[in-house]
Image 1: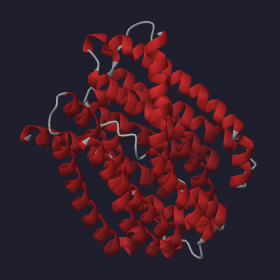
Image 2 (image 1 turned 60 degrees about the vertical axis):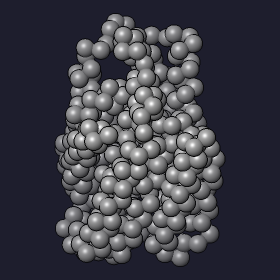
Image 3 (image 1 turned 180 degrees about the vertical axis):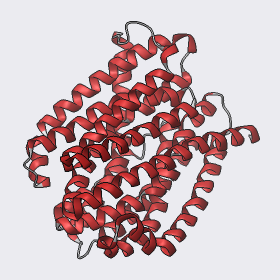
Length: 409
């Protein structure tokens, strides 16, 4: 177990560093974009970008499916499996294109945005992102966390480069959105480079039984990832719908900073997931490993919440400027909300790793409970964060004990 914990800490460091550097690149991107666009246009951009995340992350279940299958597959069959993985990525991209096309009028009306170009680029982001996400799942399943971390960082790094260039040239919201497409393409190229020895021609191949099983498993996993992604990202679109553009800009700035611990600490789930799958396959004591990871994350989150409470005024002023000072109290609330939301993300990964299916229905019930709560009671922006913290706590407790019960039976 000591060797497993040591390996976990090393791999977690790679992933944590990647996410940390990605956050730095992300914040420099948002720092530049928010100051150039101003609160109103920045609120529009962030609402559109949140829409891409809502559509992307459920389909990002392919990352978990691929990682899980690679852990348990015979390594001699890996090249054939990658052909099916590429086929699956194209199928999911096609499905997502149809879903987005059918949702065009609804999204345009809900966001109060009539520009076809803005919505088209918004739809393009999740479609392109499926491919680097898929190959990142291959790296995760192989437990090659150093290249996995580099691929993750490259997407945000190149997004920053392209974003500064395009926005400075006067493309404003269009340039900010387009930079995400170009960043995903750069990450895809890097992932292909790291996995070049695992590919064989043709890159895409359909095998009736195996490809269908992989597709159905991905769609099932998407109900899990979609449930958690919905809770984590629906708040900004809801605020955009219920409050003014200026208030949305303030909330977006606080949410951007406040969700840092979720990305940093929650990213450790990328290490936890394949390791638990492997340990379960080998009949090792995986629950103890999961609890250890959970405790490490909890300590880090408490320290982060304290840091937010003390440093919120300085962080807001330095990163976003005086125009966003009214979001200080929101950032402090996000520091507390990040604790249950981050732990819930790890608990959900654990449930997926041991294939616990009991909690899925209650997870979606909690999501709709959050939306209903915000709609019914939203006298100020802080109530969206309070409801988010409450419902994420319910999800963490439920998914944790559901996984514990599943393990004991």
